[in-house]
Length: 279
Image (cartoon, rainbow, N blue to C red; front, top):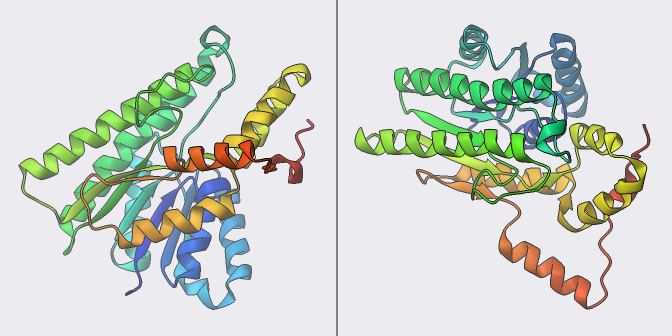
């Protein structure tokens, strides 16, 4: 496969960083992005150390995804670096989960709406417009989670899941637009990466009162996953995707059923022991 140029928002750590590592490992070109320019620089340096032969295939740019003009500048930087953008993977987002809706602060709700909804709007506007200008189009992926794909109600995720349901609606509308335009050169897809143990997840877990944390960790052992497990699988499917409206879903019903069956026969699934949940 010819080298692809990939923009990954929210890629200084966690899932986004894992995606970047996997694209680089496969010989592709990657633009790292995040709100904090120092963290962007550190992520680029870390990947450059890990893949010394890939230093010319990595660049980074600080960008607040909720600010449209900054997203436009991110696109321009990426084009200046690599000439075109084949894949825009919109991973940037913010989650505050595990609490009743009334316990979300106004600041947390605003942060989720800005990052997850407005950020997705901005990414879609910029990426679709840019891909329409370049020969061969491209692929745009929006990230779902918290019941956003199916509309399933998840206790403790009211605000977060509502924002992600909005992203699902946005993706569906964008797909319909492409079909009405009879334009398959730009593919719109979604990624449902499951429950990954990232820096953000650890931060959230540390806010749960210790008396309730044991139950949360038991659930995490069942549904959770390591970033290095999910990201290679997801990246392979992004690279080989040729389908409009594809939802790349890690935590399928089949996977859950398989885990339940294994546990029924005595297998113990341990995901959390390698991590520290202490504040």
